[in-house]
Length: 427
Ligand SMILES: Cc1ncc(COP(=O)(O)O)c(C=O)c1O
Image (cartoon, rainbow, N blue to C red):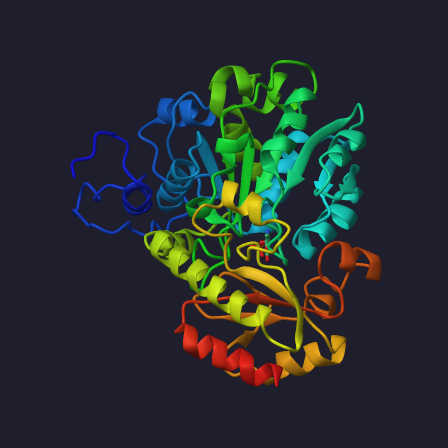
């Protein structure tokens, strides 16, 4: 069949976008530009680069050719305008908040988030004077009710860690639009293969590249994606984007760079000053992972559904949180937002509670007991005593990480082997 649409499909873009053979040697894979700096053609060239009047490479804290390929590729896969890579998923969140919020600003976050994000928002971000209201995302009114005069962003994970529950992103986006507040979505657990938040009204996307996008557990990384669809000049809420920046000759980022003004602000200003840079070596590993993202995510979701169906019938399991199961509360949202399956991370609850969870985690052989998700390997953890341990008992239950909960990240091994290991460890 000959395709009429001229836009390349996801698998093609995941392999090619942002990259071309290296012009001098013809090297087909992306070279690792292991360099801190770049020779200027002359002083005028250097000056233009420093004033952001020309695009180019100055210093690898800000720009590096290997990292640039990754940035262009993620922006493309997220149907967005531009992206800025950084050293971890947490760093990407730091970059977004530091670019938009001032001291005494407020933001709203779903209370179903990765435990480390709840911690980051609740503790360290408060030290910067950024006040957070956590809301239950299952009732969209909660977002609207939490809005204050100084609210500067809304943060959700469409597919939440640890329980794989789904937020009705389109409905949250309507609230964000009504109050002219950017909607920031952490798309880590979904990846752009399963879900594109920009298609449903997100304005900024963050990722921990450490997970499925790299895919093999080798490299830490993060990225901020500018969807290019928020007008920062509409009112005076975002002076960092709408006021002159004295450190760059008084340019106004949103005016000078238009629909990628936010990405430029993040890179040229916030990344410059915070310095949470991604190394070119890690960018290379992550780029190699992305090439197979579509194949891996199909297999991850296929295996996850089979495991969820098996566990749902297990006499020692009281609950399986996978949104791909027909009786799950999020099944309909899953069909709408995740037509290729709602990922491969979910939780189970064991009837015998805390002790049974500890025993299960200690008796797996194929699964790895680690603080990570989104690896080729199947992974297991007891969130209440690890990833979510800093939360109060109440917060743990709200975040889907109570004492009887185990989180599974289903890998790419043979499904029979995965199920055998679960069967033996539950016993
Ligand atoms: C959903 C989600 N977002 C963000 C992060 C933070 O990413 P990183 O560990 O790369 O800083 C994690 C880490 O587990 C995560 O699961």
